[in-house]
Length: 271
Image (cartoon, rainbow, N blue to C red; front, side, top):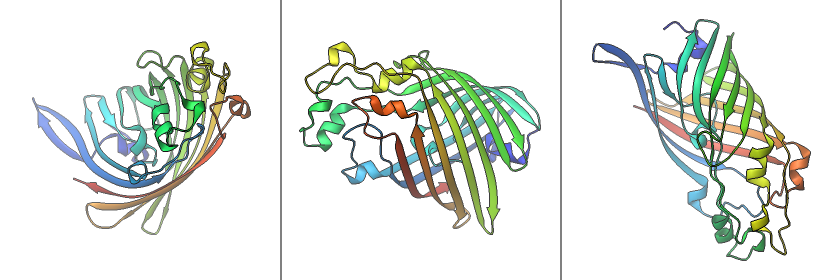
């Protein structure tokens, strides 16, 4: 496999041979603290467990198949690894089949618990599962940067219906002993998908929660993520990201804001 430096994360560092075929792998333990507000009404981080994230990340490459975390973004610790297969790879561009989580789940019962069960807006609301997509990704490798486009079907792999398209750009800026990644993305969510998370169906209508059908929406994200080596195996990581959505998303009775800012501090141990 021949890939440029910017794509080297796709092929992990360690190599082994099984059945006369070489594969690459890397295992990493992440311990991080996240401040991660949500757009949904009533969501609060009210315990240490909701701030703390402990993740075991395992990257693997074998004959075009891969399990890969996004090491250029702090959000990979929350959304998990991507699974995929490389359809085409050269030094300038790549096309993959991918499976990944685009939107995390949320449970109204957890919001009720955080509000001492005194939050009528969430009473009787159905839990929303994660939006797990199956689709294609095109990646273009530039000088110390990568540009990618995803198109994925959500309903094929989860209870959430619809589809999603994402455009993302990430630039590496080395500074002294820091690797600083500057990211920007635009994501389009279909009407069915937005309605699944922010809409109110007829069976969910109450005196304080009126019926609502959501429209398709855009998400815009800006992120700065930085890594600094502490020792041969330990790395310090920090990041800040700001996300905002189409203005009409605020029309949903379930949404409190269309803008959130997320902060992260943590360490990684690479085995």
